[in-house]
Length: 166
Image 1 (cartoon, rainbow, N blue to C red):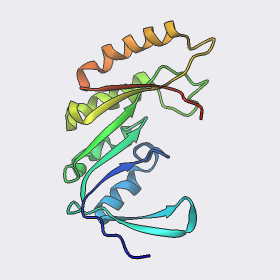
Image 2: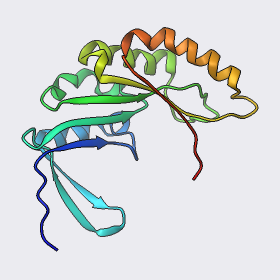
Image 3: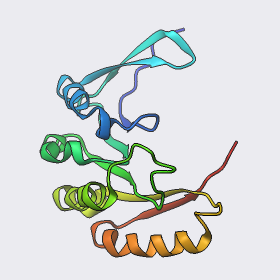
Image 4: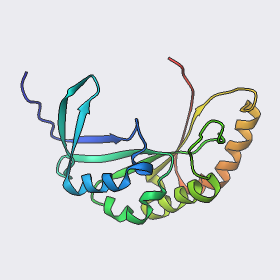
C-alpha cells in the first residue's frame, strides 16, 4: 500500500468529543504546531500524522455544546477558516448531566462567538430531538421559540434533526 498525499482538506473536528469545551488548550497548541496525531479507531496500532498547516487545510468545522473556553482566543483562529456547529437544545440536566448553564454560559458564549467571528460562521444545531413524557412536541416547540428569540440574531442557519437509534 502506497502513501496517499492529500492536497487540500476540510477538518471536521470534535464530533466524537467536544474539543472546544474540554480540550481547547490542546487544540490551540496543535493548531500552532500545525499537526496532530490521530489513532485509527479500527486499528489502534495505526497512527496518522495530520498536517494542519493553512497551506493544506481549507477550513475547520468545530462541533461543540460549549465554546466558552475558547472565547478569549478566537483571534488565533483567524488563519484557519473555521465555523462552529454549536448545539443548543431543550434538554435539562436529566439528559445533559454535565452541561453548563444555558442562560449564564452557553447562550452568552454563542452570542459572543457570533459577534467575534461573524454570524455566518456560527451554525445553531437544535438536535437531536427525541420525545418522551417530559420532552413532548409542545415542549420542544415552546423551547425552540425561546431559543430563536435568544439566538436568531446571532446566526444565519439552524439545523434540526431527530434522534435515530440505529
